Image 1: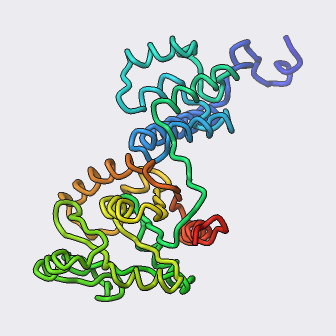
Image 2 (image 1 turned 180 degrees about the vertical axis):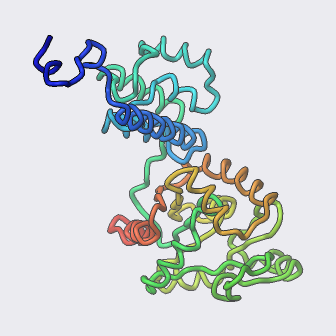
Length: 317
């Protein structure tokens, strides 16, 4: 009999020496669930194109213990567009990567192979060196374009924020001439017919939005920087009309956050909300058409990053 047993302590069995206390098992289970949820959110972000596959790989390699780093390559590949299990297995065989590998544990050769595969299938947009004084800020619905633009207008009066015309009714607290010029369909038709709009589009299959041409041309001629806060269709029209324009795409920090923002603002019904989310998926897929990408996790930080892009010495005259 051991001294501990003589002292009244329960004897130690081999199993009891290795089994963790109950509280530790509960905590470990919570951490495992949180990690699975974090990995699931990342896969959603890649699938919805909130982040690029290359960005997720960079996060994994930077921190192998992170949710990105602990994601298996099989999970990663099947989160990419048009890749099912059969195609996934062929890709892994071609890249000579074991299906049990985790992203953060890829070797040097495997990292290069994965990067080359991703760059060939989903090339990331390279920013142009020269930048125009005509700057377009666009992004998916509910990402906060208007809030970021308003912050820039308030703190940087030297930058002119263009005011769009729209046929939709004003939301609570919106002021005509400050947030938008609210017009009816007849007036919008006149603006189009007389060539007064630089760009215009029907958004979410409902209301029309457009940007007046003359105030922008006058501001640019006076040497001012002009910021257009518009939708994807409008951004494409501006790029076609003014190829030198600088296009900035505003991204949400995650898909889940974008959904929460749309639900939280409470300005749309269930049907319109569903429509806007479907539209957002397509808008996110177009981000590589833009010169720069800015994540709106914090309004002030996102606005500062946009202004820094605008004021960069690389900007063209």
